Length: 60
Ligand code: SF4
Ligand code: SF4
Image 1 (cartoon, protein in one colour):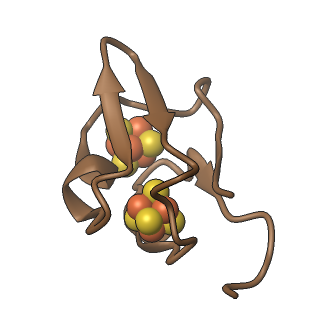
Image 2: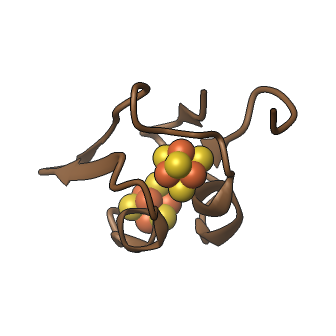
Image 3: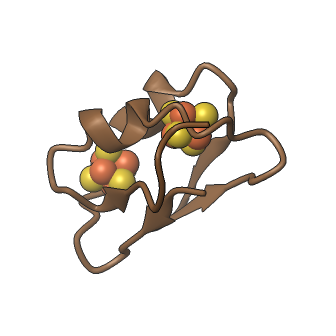
């Protein structure tokens, strides 16, 4: 499961756009990740320009 650091997030929405599983929502200034949809592809971690998202384990 991807971890989100709200202190780093700039609310750019890039992670929302890259997620093919539509697992990320940007609601006001918070990112919500639906762990039931996320397949841990880490695309959002890679695209985030502010390193606000972090993978916590290897891709399964
Ligand atoms: S790891 Fe992949 S599936 Fe999960 S929220 Fe990020 S982009 Fe979406
Ligand atoms: S890509 Fe990073 S900075 Fe942009 S909204 Fe997502 S978590 Fe926040």
